[in-house]
Image (tube, rainbow, N blue to C red; front, side, top):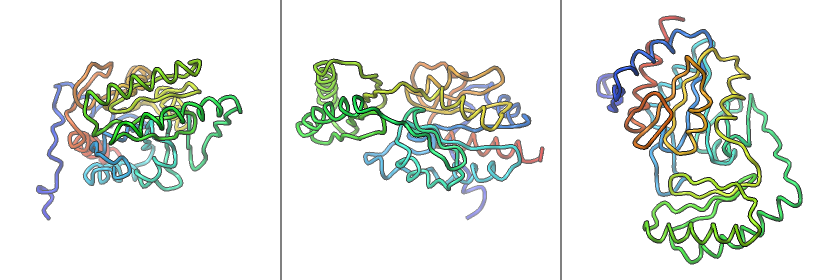
Amino acid sequence: MSGEASRPTGRVDVDESLPEAIERLASTQRLLVALDFDGTVSPLVDNPRDSRVLPAARAALHELERMPDTWIAFVSGRPLAGLVRVTEADDEALLIASHGVEVRLTGGAVDVGLTDEERGKLDALAVELEGIVAATPGSKLERKPVGLGLHTRGVRAEEARAADRAALEAASSLGGGFLERAGKDILEFAVRDATKGDGVERLREHVRATAVLYAGDDVTDEDAFAALHPGDVGVKVGPGETQAGHRVSDPDAVAALLAELAAARAPRW
């Protein structure tokens, strides 16, 4: 296959200032590329276990990883074990999972250390949510290290809204105290507070980054955009209100953006 035929087709020029921002990032001394996974480097699919990084995005990330003073990290709401599986990450990959609760830096995960009370709250809510899932065909319950996720991707909109309402009522009936977070086709309940913004800050400190690129498509990525510093670049993927300074259309466009960043940074090394 020719090089021309294999190039990503997504547009990266959704706003005119993005190419300039890519050039600026390419020249930074220590670059961190932090990426949400689902809907950012992988298209959204009905079965989350089937998600994988787009080949064009993976090729660009491999190019960047080979460059000195350049780090790649994935930042996701998925639990760490699931994130490792879908990213096909090696032992040295930098991973932020469970919205910043789980952190893997050069092979080590942070122990979340739930108390007996926290486990009891989650177990009680899990029983309620399992009943909601049983009554809502197509929905799924995901157990996370410090929470639970009610997935409604593929469920009709009216039924998904009803399931979410029932889940919120169930959490309230148990005395509340859960941290509730709504994302794309998922409603999450947690007993510990952490955000993707916290995760990005941990990564920045770990690699001593002089600039960060963060790209994401979901509501939860807004915490990461809010944590960016002057000189960093935030890229919102798809529609919706955002604090990010730039926007691209879809994961194909993210792959193209990463390829342009790799091409711009390579000559500097």
